[in-house]
Length: 258
Image (cartoon, rainbow, N blue to C red; front, side, top):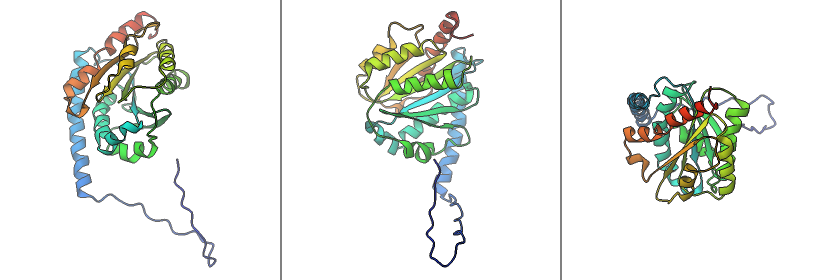
């Protein structure tokens, strides 16, 4: 969305007001944190490479998206920088797997928003610059965002390339029947959902989705972590890649992937 500046005329001149020069970031602390984030990202790329090799994914090209819960209970994790840290840990997967070396990005609560993709160039402070300005802090529904993911990758941007969606939430949803229908429909297409539950919820419904009947293939996996910031990169990448190779094989056998 554009930003518009409205200038009031003082009656003395019709000339437009001079535009203010864009402010530059001169904070030494912010610059230092950016340099550290870049260094950490480069190390994580090596960790992802190792994980991909272990799971026979080092020659696989995919489309990679991140779906991040922005319901009200998540607001503290956004403001504390945990979501930014999490996104930075996911980014190397996109850089290594994604056909465009990026992460497609969504926010969701009871509504959803597509955000600009995250790249190696603009990942730093992405959550504060982009996501926080779009967050809704609402309730939690899974079906609308699942349906939009199918719409994007199947209808709007059809491709034979497989798609990995990392779907992060901290709570139960209020649209269980609709979410089941959406996931069953998604199972007909080349999209795999890796659900990640963060926090202390029971996540009983996500556990049910992991074993949902009536799908063309098993197109989803789930794991829970109470504090994702305390999980090592090696363990995180291992869990994120755990069932994706199995889905790739099954989807090929069923003709979902060429």
